[in-house]
Amino acid sequence: MLKTRAGAILLILLALSVFPQWEIAGAAQSNATYQLVENWAQLPTGTKWETMTAVDIDSHGIVYVFQRGEPSKVMAFDSKGKLVRSWGDKMFPSAHGLRVDRQDNVWITDRGLHQVLKFSPEGKLLLELGKKGIAGDNNSTDALNGPSDVAIARDGDIFVSDGESTNTRIVKYSKDGKLIKFWGTKGAGPGQLDVPHSIVMDSKGRLYVADRSNKRVEIFDQDGGYVSEMTNAGTPYGLFMTRDDVLYVVDGSQGNDNLTIIDTKDQKILGRVGGLSGPHMLSVDASGNIYVAEVRGASIKKFAKK
Image (cartoon, rainbow, N blue to C red; front, side, top):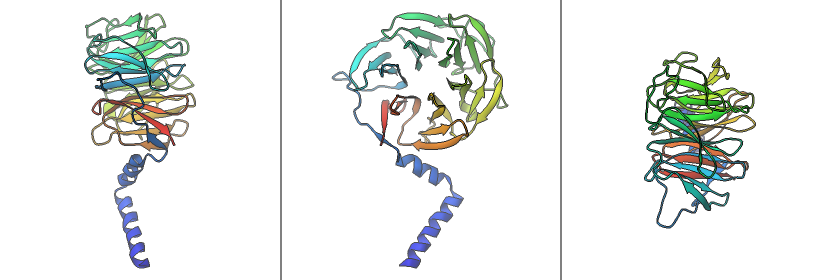
């Protein structure tokens, strides 16, 4: 009996040494620190989640979600999952990213409109970046092409990852929407980009860009200077940065479908969450609950700390 058990353990250890991804996949699927919260949102009677592309949370705990499926719209839920408002029905032909800034304004990226749109919490349009329906190129000063995400600095400067189409750049605007500069050429070298799909900022003001096709997260200063990169989170689709510089990364590539949590101070992996289906963007609330917008899974999943 003892020999049999020892032999089994030896075989497992040998397997993990040859196929270390088994250990990672097992940890990801176990979700040891988090548990799925079923039916957290109270959807209107007769409706269900459609293709969901983004989610973020304001200073009052209101959860904003972006729906690409018919009809496209923004929905807002309170912390108990009650729908408090929705707006923008059929306004967004190709919904992509959603971020809430420090003043609780809601920023939308739409790759079909080729625009970034700033709204009040109630859905009043406050600012437009890019030309509606007009695709620019990588050197355009007045047009975008498939903008994927947006990050807002403390001073109000706006950073757009312009890369869900043929562009491969980051565009910087002033708080009132005036172009300051842009950077990024297509490639895999330091500072180059290939499908910059998401962008966030740490407490030092550095920009983290999900360089999706290069399977890395690149780090820049606010003038476009290359700082470094991270390659331990698979194929990065969506990013979220906490105030204490913990980075959450979802990998939406089919067959991977997981979330990696990384301490950016030393790039140590703090945990993984599996059981996802096409995770696209995500957010984390003040209590550490994780919300993930799924494209293939057509859902907003909530995970609570155990």
